[in-house]
Length: 597
Image 1 (tube, rainbow, N blue to C red):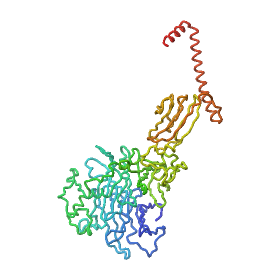
Image 2: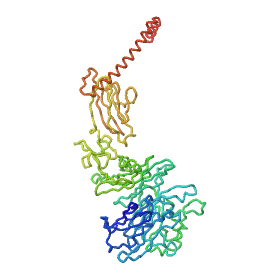
Image 3: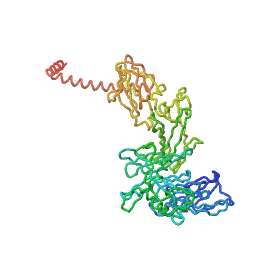
């Protein structure tokens, strides 16, 4: 079982977690087994019926996208069962949504045969890539992307889907007797709103918080053949139910457009409805579901726009954490989004001033450079994030306040953290610490920013900066410098090559300082004060240097000044030579010069 040619693709808890169901590729011959959770084998006396052959339970090829979930309750006869979405053939021609045979565990007797989607029917499944499955109420839900059969007359496109089956489904009596009698699917819509919406059509991963069965969170990408981009959208279970309760979609002929089915053509009971015994369903219902598994209405995402989207980025996996501060009646969602380049984007979602949800990028972690992150899990018990690539596994703390943020500005935006004014450090949040996730108080950090006094001499140049290295998420945000001077008051600094130069880290270089350059310089980012410098110009005397760096600086400045002096002297000598050879012209030049004055 643990041969290196066997890639484990399914691990599901059984019997309240005391045992594990495991299925692996077994060198392109899928095999499954049940073991104890401490990874020891079961004794011979504990035989598990139906285990041994893993076909249709996990894939032949380890690179295939598949999903599986072990469902204990709600199945026919109250028996436990494995539901899966995978390839059922070595050639990958047959992809299925499958439920294994149901056995009476005590006696080993098979009580119900397996159920699956129709074989080789593109209306049911067309080369799907499965990303997740969930047991909710009387249904099992599957999320996947596939070739869109409704778009086939216009070309080839991939759409994201959510499908569901009733757990009580035992197939039809004569029609669909080995197949699902309640299978339905609908398109998932993740797009940027507009007159012509921009769609992210290919779902890559889906996540559901253990404490909330009413929400799904998913990452989507565009097709990699064109403009590359990714988005995160959330979907409510109510919206999914609404799509499955709406109209069906059909194509009258092979050349016809796909249109909604008229209500008068829908048989009773409504196809896809869960009933106690599906073998009692009339043939009209079974024939309809066989040819009409697709719903007309797409499942819309929450809030009308994605939670987060970005171009030139491929998001693969995600997990979501909820932070609730009861005493302040505040709730935040933190998204951890993995990429195909081994990075994690940390995004927070919060309620804005108008009560509508807002989101922003908080941080970017380089956890596995240039390695796609294949697996990501969240542990509430250990308050950690676990990621896996093809070569490594890493554990990352969810709360990394003082290790990630050295300034009040970034600290107060992270819902895990707060700025401690007493120690001037970023610490795990508690009442009394500064926190402003929604950026409602732009001056919250004004009394806690770095303030520095710098004494400079006349003619010197000085560099002012808030960061030794700008965090990546701040690189493309505009930085504004303001100068408070005696002559002009407060004004915005305009960059120029002769006086004020902006550095790549958002800093400011003031060249050839004179008395008018003295005063306070404040650096702002998005309306928030980052740092402040008080510049004192000593125009009357030159203080003796006390450090090696000061000597080098003064030496460099004098070298530049001496070169300028030599250049000026050469120009004067050339002019003097010209004047001595042609005194009349010189007199004329002087006269014209005085006349112009």
